[in-house]
Image 1 (cartoon, rainbow, N blue to C red):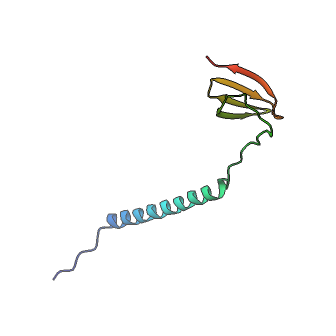
Image 2 (cartoon, rainbow, N blue to C red; image 1 turned 180 degrees about the horizontal axis):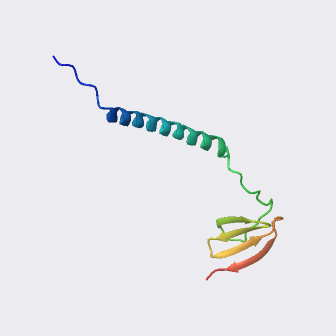
Image 3 (cartoon, helix red, strand yellow; image 1 turned 30 degrees about the vertical axis):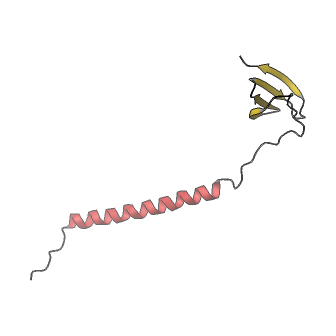
Length: 96
């Protein structure tokens, strides 16, 4: 029974390249996962809501947006309400 001949050097080289590529990909994947775990915040940091925001009667908030020095509330009635950090209503804009 004849023994199998040894693979040519090119095949051994390709096998080495494939194994090296697999190792590099595994190390890269572990590095990316490690960076995501260590760099992402544990809990989202949300802006501080003003203590006293009072919406007009019959208005429900659909969206709240925070800016530097103001809070914007978009209502279900198509109104944009702008509040100061102390909760005082600054502007009421009706959307058409």
